[in-house]
Image (cartoon, rainbow over all chains, first blue to last red; front, side, top):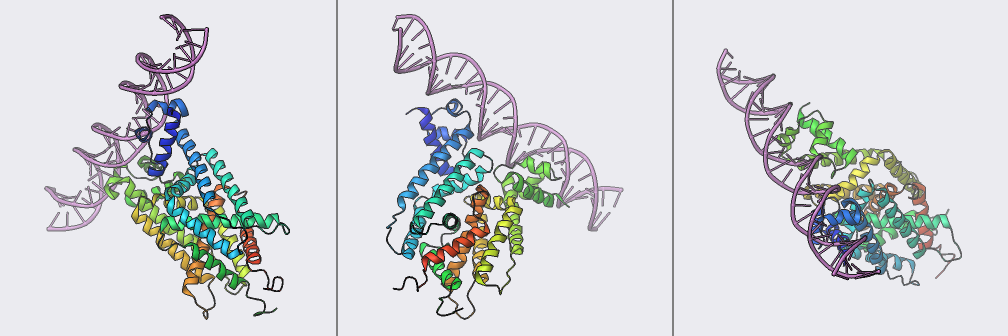
Amino acid sequence: MGHREELLAGAKQCLYERGYARTTARDIIAVSGANLASIGYHFGSKEALLTAALIEATEEWAEAVNKMWDPDPDAPFMERFESLWKAVVASLAEHRNLWVSTFEALNQAERLPELKQRLSSDVELARVSFAQLFGPGPEQADERADRAVGAFYVALMQGVMVQRLLDPERAPTGEDIALALRTLIERAAPTPDVHPE
Amino acid sequence: MGHREELLAGAKQCLYERGYARTTARDIIAVSGANLASIGYHFGSKEALLTAALIEATEEWAEAVNKMWDPDPDAPFMERFESLWKAVVASLAEHRNLWVSTFEALNQAERLPELKQRLSSDVELARVSFAQLFGPGPEQADERADRAVGAFYVALMQGVMVQRLLDPERAPTGEDIALALRTLIERAAPTPDVHPE
DNA sequence: CACAGGCGCGTACGTACGTATGAATGGATA
DNA sequence: TATCCATTCATACGTACGTACGCGCCTGTG
């Protein structure tokens, strides 16, 4: 394995252990088997290396999350919904540092347009995936509504992650999310036979 | 105004303009009228100063966000729902840096327990506020469901913010969020007269 | 007036950082 | 073997940083 790969691997490890902003070039060297000057040689700068590592880590993260979902396409909606959110919450428990890095990447993206684009398109992909995972039957396609639902799910996921990162004790569980949606449905659309109009 | 206050104000300004990780002691000095050595004198260290500033900024942020909500308590649910999310999206447009700081604070909280506690209790407060803003009539109180709904709203808000920070073009608008909920309700609870079981 | 203490101020110190330099290495090619 | 080029390596350079130091200026107190 050449220094290029070692540097990328070391940088990713540092991303998990120290985060983006706090890893130094010498941290990466200490962790990998490479040489200080190899950073400049292979990547031009430390920042370019870290950005590349962040992008790779994000890709791996997306793959890992994808593998956690177990669609079971014919279960009733609410059941699929609840199992999805249980899986999402479990994913955070197992890959916490990945999620920490993801939010750190969000901050770095404010300064790094390339990274920002990358994250944006990842989010867009997630919207589409969610939309078709929970989309309507093929009959009643409504593109705008599907996109909105996808974005809604993604937002919910990101927000659940924020809360669980901050305070797992009080953050919602997968069950809580499902309960909340059921409650919302009851309150937003009281059964017509109760309140006929 | 003594240096102590000037330093806090300057540090907050730097938080907005450069973020936590990238502001240096000399940045703060340049912006405030204070002296380099005053940081050590009044706060002990630069990090202590920045943390204090971050906590103050978070408090002001919470106040500012609170003021943006305009309950209109007697409108129908869906109307209140949509106007809430329009307000949230507008709040991001107007106070973008405030929200950027908030997410940076989230990252720093990984290393600063005091800040983490502060943010956690802010989130808990938001959960409760949302819960009672969209809670049930006083008759049918269900504490667990209310908490879940509060957490659900908070998550949705945080996630919408993430998406709008990253890519306002493709991120959901307030209308999109309302559309998504309507769609979800239709799909989750198909009107009984269409699919009787 | 004397003087003490809180505070402001300029500056120096030590260090950690990112990057640059130039020599050394090693394997492929001829 | 001789040559060459990509890579590795040790180290140096310049800089930006956080903090420490010590003097000077006020204001309040006796």
